Image 1 (cartoon, rainbow, N blue to C red):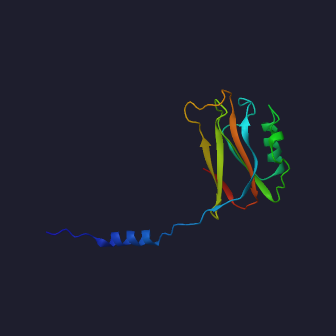
Image 2: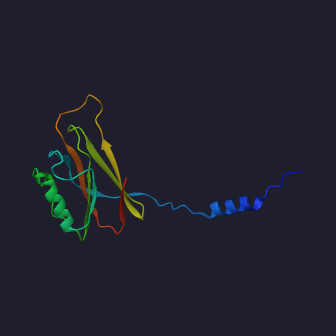
Image 3: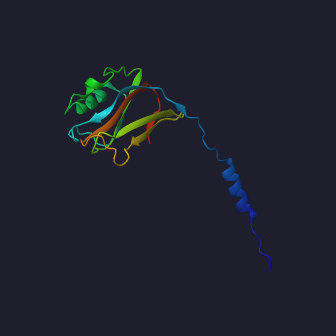
Length: 154
């Protein structure tokens, strides 16, 4: 007796999978202005953990700057502190506390028409290349044009 394979479920699966459309939006690099890329030296006393911030208003910006300045006056290093939040928004990324000043963070920001995507690269020094043995916390803050999109950190 021959086995009969019911082809109807297979055809239905092919039809369903074939009709699914993948959203394929082009990634466009988002222009940003560097506000600061440096290290905090307060051994975590600033109260900022390994965190990412999408700041769209003055009060949140002032709150973050107050935390950043709580141990040392870091905002003196900023290229700007007065942000026009009607035109711009701020992306701020803080790494974990590190054992030396050789660590850093790089940001690559793109727009896929649905989200602003912030790719975070943590620069970790190779073994034996530690510059100084001081507790630091790398951070990177940029300003971008105002968007009406959600921000996703990766």
